[in-house]
Image 1 (cartoon, one colour):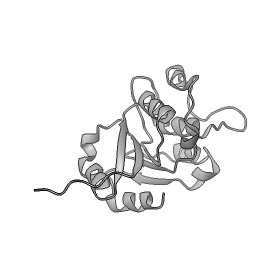
Image 2 (cartoon, one colour):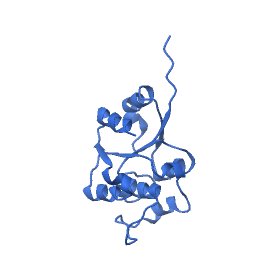
Image 3 (cartoon, helix red, strand yellow):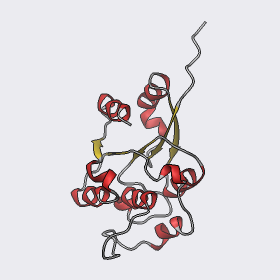
Image 4 (cartoon, one colour):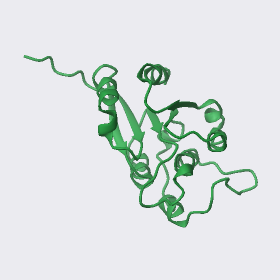
Length: 164
């Protein structure tokens, strides 16, 4: 008889347009060994919905969150993090290209107050220094946000999540 899994104690939102099946091993280790309850969002709309209605303890964020609602996905993760933090740029002009469909995802919606200071980790197969710099400007908390590449270095990811 197998031993029942331990109850999850921490909630993690993983935002990535790749399906969770791509990370089945990593997800399994985090859930079974590290006791994370993981929710998966594949689009900005799904992420905004979860962050507006459920409390989380940490966030894994793909730099290039696609989905039907965004035509310039390279900035998707950065847009989402700025929305979570409620921040804008000093001159009011965001560094990302205009994208009306993506902007509509955020209109009239707000993250739960408890999610506004979530610790975040960027996990992406695509690295763009300008996007990472803009992401780090989302808040003082994000000024040292960690970037991990794909494929996932599970030991590094677990280490970063332990610090949350």
